[in-house]
Image (cartoon, rainbow, N blue to C red):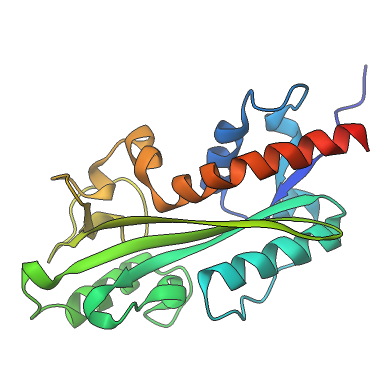
Length: 213
């Protein structure tokens, strides 16, 4: 029995949804790349947790990508993303995942945000999901790309899909929240999908250069 192919790319996250999305974007892009076994997450790669000490999405994405690439010796992709509310001067921003004080408590974060916006009229509830995605090699940073999905925040959640603030953001030009969209519909317009697709040419080049090194 042949040995499994060696990993070639690590996504600096333990979020399996993000890993599936990156694998789908890469599928068929690089000849000979088995995205299901050679594109792995931080746990599989044995990568350490990275302190997100940057003050922008891009800075945090770069920190995670660079430190993961150095720790694993592999090409690494990382992203940082969140919600920027116009009347809150861009907050919660990089603190989106811990807005209510505990990292990853989606229900508490959403409840606090809605309470803070309770007296804001619909015409002033503009916001955007923003994402920065970074690619790094063990020798250093390769590229950083960003994506944005603008919309309007509702006064109450709607929909059961997605995660985070998806149930309250209605993308511009649509009448459904991100939590009411199908996976393919959301990925086609999402901030993360846009950032990853913008990063894809550099990522494909990096993987192809591995083959000729």
